[in-house]
Image (cartoon, rainbow, N blue to C red; front, side, top):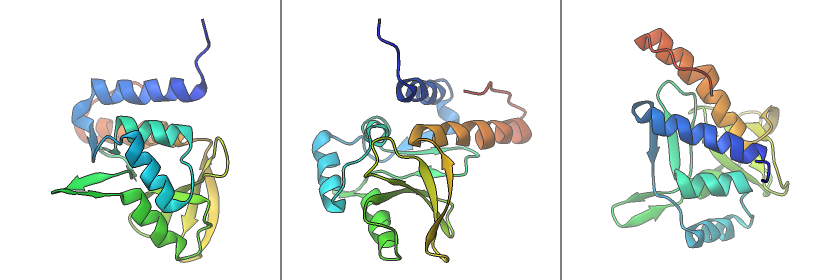
Length: 169
């Protein structure tokens, strides 16, 4: 039997949380087909990392109750597909973000989470819009930042606000 990769293990943990607690997670947007993923990659002149492609195919866009981040992908509005990750990335690239990076989340103000797609397994970095630079690395992978968001923000929020205790993933 083949050993699972770290990406597979983290994916299964996130997916299990979403399935067990759908009331605390919101998968919205559209589940991306391979054609849509390729179109978004062409629009950005990059190739998405493996974990991000898996995210797009399985969740589209994602948010957790009490979470700090909303994870961008694509969504449908009426009959139009909005490539939210493309729009946000191009906007932040105009502010100096290197062309090999994609923006997949934001704190809603000045900081964007991004990955360097020229790396096979990119870490997650923070781009600060006012400073126009990468300011720190906050996770070793895309799935790791989602797990951190659940463990460090969502679970304490649910305990504090609703007295619901859920084990860490």
